[in-house]
Amino acid sequence: MTEIPDRSDRVGVYFNASRDRRAHFQASCGPIFSQLAIADSVDGTAAEVARVAVGLLVLDLHGYARPGGLAAVGGLIVNRGGAPVLVLCGYEQSAWLPELMAYGSFEYLICPVLDDDLRDAVREALAAHDDPAAVMRQRLFDKERELRDLVALQRSVQRALDGLDDVDALAAKACLALCDFPAVSHASLLHLKPHGDLRLVAQAPSDGLDLAGLLGHTDHLLQSPLRDVFPPLMAVSTGRMVLLDAPEKAGDPELAMALHDRHVRMVLALPLRSDIGHPDAGTVSGAICLMFDRHIALSREQFASFSSLAQFVSLGLGLSELKHRNDELSAQLSHLSTVDHLTGAANRRAGETTLDNELRRARRYGLPLTVMSFEVSSFRSLNDLYGHPLGDAALRLAAETVKRRLRASDRLARMRGQEFMIVATHTSPADAMLLAKKLRVALAGADLPACDSVSVSLAIAHAGVEEGVDDVLDRLDAALQRAKRAGRNHIELAG
Image (cartoon, rainbow, N blue to C red):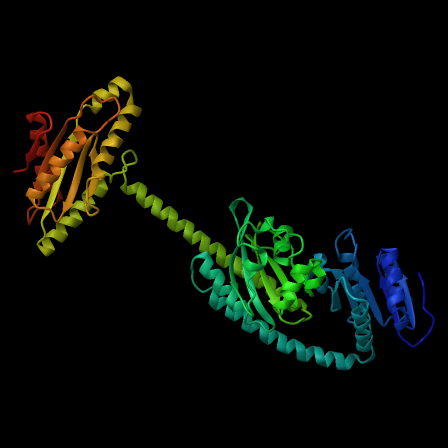
C-alpha cells in the first residue's frame, strides 16, 4: 500500500487486485487526494477504511472474481453508512450494480473510462463529502422526480399490456410505452424462438434509428458478429442485465458511430425470462433494449423498476403465446372431433349437425336442399385380401376423388364403413342427379389401389319442408339399399 503526502484534507482508499490498475489510478488521481491508500484485497481495504477517516472509497471491480459473491464488497459499502463511494466496473459486469445497491448508495462509472472523466468523478464525489447536507437535499429532490417518472412508466406499460394481443402487437405496444420514460429515445424487444432463433419482434424507432438495419437482419440475431458487444444480444447470451453508458465502450467503432449518429448515448438491455418468480431464474426468452439520448446515472429504484417491467412484459408475452397455443389446440380438438381421421371428410356427427343446420336454413328461407348418399363396393373383400392399410388407402382416395368435384358449399361426411353422405345446398333434384352421374363416372374411373374396377351405389333425397334429420336419413338409407340391390353403379331417388 502506498500513501500520497498531504496536499489538502482529502483522504481516499482505492481497491483493485491488479497491480497495473492500482498504479494507473495512483498516477492519474493520486494528486487529487491529501492521502491515498491503495489496497489489493477486500480485507486490506476494510483495514484502511477503519484506520483513518476516509473521504472517498473507490471500489474498482475490474477483474474481480466474485469469490463468494458480492457480499464482501457489499460489506464495504454498508460500513460507509452513506459516506461517498465510487464503484468502477466494466459494462460486462454492469449487472452487479443493482446487486451492490442493495447494500447502500454509491456513484458508479462504467469502464473503460477516460482519465479526465475519472478525475472529474473523483472530484465530484469528494465534493459531496464536503457538503453532505446539500447533497442530501439534491438527492431527495431527484428521488421525488424519479419516482414520479417510474410510476408514470409503470402505468403506461400496464395499459399497453392490457389485453391478449398476438406477440408482435403486444411487443409493439410495450416498446411505445417504454419510450414514455424521459431520455429513452428508442425501445426494442427481441424474442427467443424455439431452436435458438433470436428475432427482433418490435421496436419504437426515433431519429431514424432502425435496429433491423443496424443488425443487418431481424432473425437469427445470436449469429450476429455483434453478439459479444451489443447489449441486448449480450443480455440474451448471458442472462444478465447489461448497461453501456457510452457506445464507444463496446469496442466496436462501426457500432459506436452508428449509435452516435442516431443520438444514442446510453444503452440498457434486460433479459426476459419465462419464470418471473426470481429475476435470475427461468429460461431466458428474449430481451428488452432501451436506448437513451443522454447519459443518466440510474438508481437502485430505476434498475429495479426496469427489471420488474421487463418481467411484466415477459409475463404478457407468455400469456399471449399461451392463448395462441390454446387457440391452436382448440382448433385442433375441434377438427379432431368433427373430421374422420382416415378420409378427411366430416365424421357422422358433424355430417348430421350440418344437415340439421341446412334443413333449418332451407326451411327458413325457402331454399332447395338435396342430400346424397353413396357407397363404394369391394372394400371389404379388398381388406380381406390385402389388409386394412391398402383398403384404407383406396377408401381415402375415393373420398378425395369426390371432394375434388364438390362445391365449396357442399359437405362430404363419412357415415359408416364405405358409406358417405353429401349435403348439397341450393341444389334441386335435377341438379343432384347430374352431380350423382358425374361422381359415378369419376369413381368408376378412379385408379384405386388393388381395384381392377370400382362400382358405386348412389341415392338422392330432396329435403321436405317439415322433415328433420332422421326423416331425411331414413329415406336416403332406404333408397341406397334399393340402389345396391339394383346392381352396379345404380342411382336411386328416395321416395
